[in-house]
Image: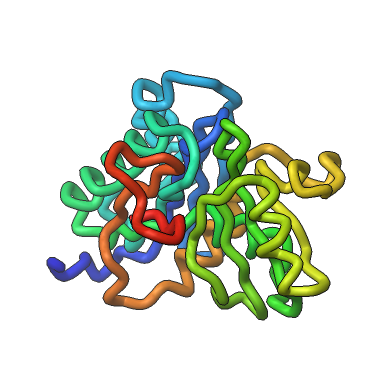
Length: 220
């Protein structure tokens, strides 16, 4: 990875995986700016301008961005692809480090920022299926799995007292009012800041990829 400019210190996060186009920026002085717009489609056309508006509001130029964290799904196929492609392109143009943050990890961090509980982050994959991952004390303790709703219930029963979060949490009995269907920008910001220096560049993780899943329901 090319050396970043000495002045690069801002962190930018992006999320276009759901029914929104959202971005957050943390300046060197710690001040945070966010933009969150509800939209079911069109994120690819809106994202660049939204980020430009955010940078202008914060008084930050692109070369001052040190890291770009982007939600990599599972979520909307087109939105996830648009966000990751934009993050990688902007990183090339600014010499920033682009890295991916699983939407499941972000939801889990949002539900348990103190990392003291066991959390199941669940994405509603439609067609009677859920994509889920379990985290304990902030660390993943399961693979990312795509399961039927009944199989998901059985899998989670093994973990005892589990906090349910994510777009599919209500499918497994959680109170729908307990999950805000919006981009978890604060969690994305925290996880981007904590990521290793050698974190790989972002790559989309789709709920239902075009190629077959591996045995056991593990998504490649």
